[in-house]
Image (cartoon, rainbow, N blue to C red):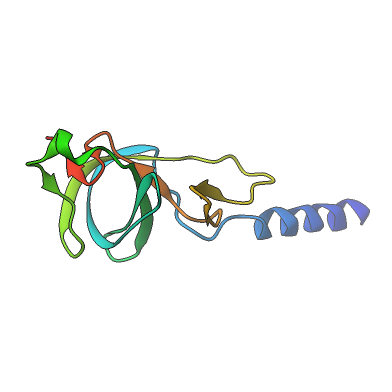
Length: 123
C-alpha cells in the first residue's frame, strides 16, 4: 500500500511541475510578425509573434547608424523571415532574463538573429 501511495505522490509532483508553454527549438528560420519595438541604452527589444500564438522577444544590440546608413530596417507591423537563435534555459532556480536592467520572466522565449545588426537586416 505504501508503494502505491508513494508512486501516486511522485506522479502527481512530476505531472504538476511541467511547463505549460510550448518550447521552441534553439535555432530555426521562421517568419514572424513584429508587434512592438522598444529600446534600452544598448539594445533593441523587439516583440514578435510566430503564427497566431507563439510570442517571443528578439534582442539586438544597437550599432552605429552610419555603418548601415542604407539598410532594410525592421518596422513594427510587418512580417520578416530571419534566422532565429533561441536562448535555452535549464530548469531550476532561475528568476528570469535581464537585458540592460529590463527583466523578462522565465517563461519568455528570448531570441537573437545573426541576420540582424541593430534594426538593420543583413542579407
